[in-house]
Image (cartoon, rainbow, N blue to C red; front, top):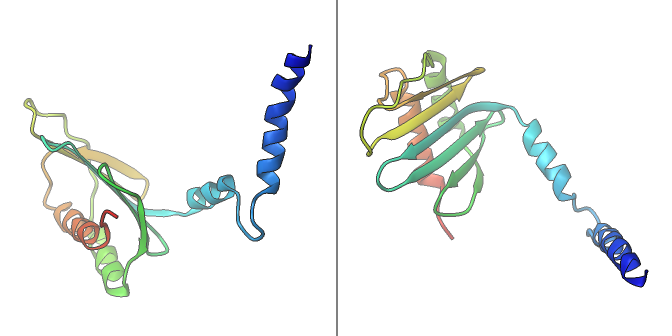
Length: 148
């Protein structure tokens, strides 16, 4: 009987102690995740594949801040300069997402998945309309993402 109480009470006690140990003014993790989820996305680019095993993901939020994530390192949160944001918005005005492309035969292909304005598509060859947006986002990734 004693063992059952330990199984039941110890996890409850640990949960209570961890909740009370949150520093004053600090937000619990679930609140931080909720705030990130509430940010509105302007454009989302994922670049995957190739022999190198790329898995780059970049989200630009409407407030001009970005989240950069690569398979090989930490997630980085930065904000674009005014010039970078204006240039991106200019490119996005001309962007047409279109339809996804079927995967070509072979192994060394890079898949680009681009989402903007409630549309999403994946391509293995970059259409001319995607190139300015993708190239600009790649430049931003190279500028701001750096492993620790």
